[in-house]
Image 1 (cartoon, rainbow, N blue to C red):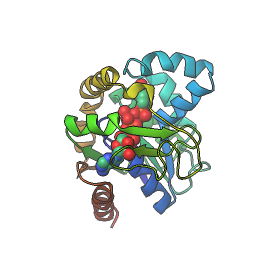
Image 2 (image 1 turned 90 degrees about the vertical axis):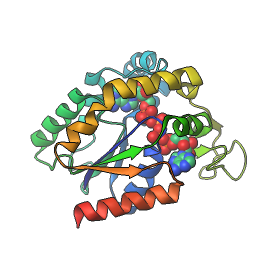
Image 3 (image 1 turned 135 degrees about the vertical axis):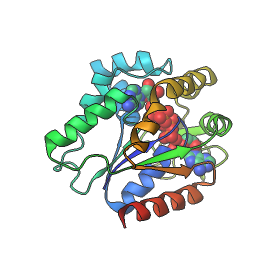
Length: 218
Ligand code: AP5
């Protein structure tokens, strides 16, 4: 099963992708997580990417395409993958198509589109906390850790992402509207887009995704 999770920042793509990938034995490939790791490791890619991420802009296509191209092969992901936060431009979507045919694997088989309003996105991002050690995602109000500031999975320290500050969130939403939203039509035209109401509680969203994917792959 080769899937793309598409939607605005803070829609819950990462939260849902982690659970769905685990349940179905898929690779969960988040370009945001990979870029944040590169930033933390201070690699040349990370230092370059940080300039864009801090402003809420997209990192250049060639950088993210290169990251994904080496993560989706049959050796790495024999049962398939979920791409979380990729593609985000038409050029990335086309590069993904080219790469899957080059690898001789199925292309994108279904796209889950997370439909959620801006107000909810801002509420989710302003309260998000992430584990410094294992990357687990929490929310101060909606998905709080048992002990404040401490990851329930590994005991790591929770922090607020730099790009979750209000000004950057506004820019990320603008970037999403301008550069990523056109992908909705791109995948609609191929009849592989499944729109899911992502405004409900996490379990409700998970159940809507499962139902949509059962229908798609029945
Ligand atoms: P990235 O990390 O991909 O950020 P994003 O797409 O903006 O998505 P988020 O991680 O912010 O949100 P999410 O939808 O995963 O929500 P989450 O599950 O965490 O990218 C960061 C940056 O990297 C980009 O701005 C760009 O610069 C660069 N980049 C990445 N990919 C790129 C690409 N392909 N091309 C170019 N540049 C790229 O949930 C959010 C919060 O809500 C959490 O606190 C969670 O606990 C909570 N929550 C989740 N679900 C629910 C629910 N149902 N109800 C209540 N709360 C919920």
